[in-house]
Length: 423
Image (tube, rainbow, N blue to C red; front, top):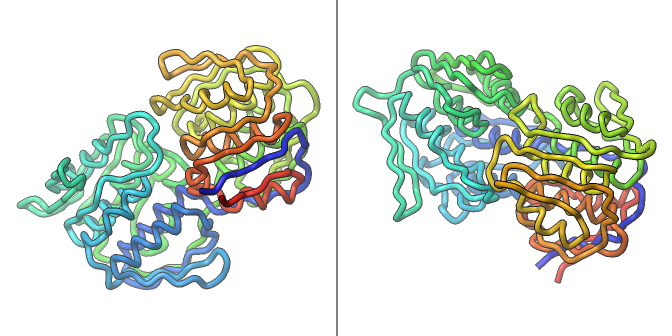
């Protein structure tokens, strides 16, 4: 078992580079299933979710070759639909994109129930609703833990899809399924996140006709085929936000590079409200601790609101800010599981109904042995360890490795005493 060991209370200083966006990369990697040609993808983050995605494609008959550190060539011409190994699919949440991509290309699909972090109830009912709107028959087999999709008697065709809730995964799956289906599909109440836009841009570069991505109405006009393409993944806004908060929490100063500042506006605004200095450049932000950090109220919302994936990291900063802060979770149930571990470090937090937490602030965090309960909680514990007095040991770090490329190495280069330890 690996763990991360941190000797804290050391300000971070210097430049830290952000990798390609995890949520874009996995969607686009599975999106290559729709193409009939070689795709070259740049700015791919080397994280375990990406590795698992490549393993799934290879097991289905695809060719995946590494060109350089962050560039891969993928050829899915010879993949066999329905052949994704269940044990690999169960390792990650985004594996459900196999369903939309297979349905769009072959007219049928089969895959295991997805895995990944368990953050409250995360059903796929909106995905199924989208597939059925396109004319598919969907069977969820609880005995085999699998989803089997076939075309209805009239085949697949474009239609209207209304999302009952704003769901990034369901929006992406609806786009994947509709791209090669005859007719026009209109997705209303669609997610607006940057990775939805990134996927649409990738598909359009491959010959698709997707418009409106980044708004709440996405229109997909079906095309007969998609060709290979060369494409670069956008930077990861959540990794960038994690480093921004780490700079503030450690009373340091970081220039976070390879970012799109517009994607970070909600994070930047809240840090500035707390008294942290944030300066924007064309493709970077500089974050500087300039004195007392004040408490604040935050509610997580779908993009462009404050991201739910930044809830735990901001929660750590609220623990050490002066005065009371509140965090209301507007996306996922049970997002505040991470608070149980922060208590061990001396945090003062009151969670009510799993949807809101009150951070009493002013805590002097102490090093402790803690367990990462999900991806973003694990990142938050790293921030807490960096800011705390003494030594913090984090285990179950497989969650962190799902979404952060070489996080220990990156933080060491800006002054952190942090090590990945194998036992």
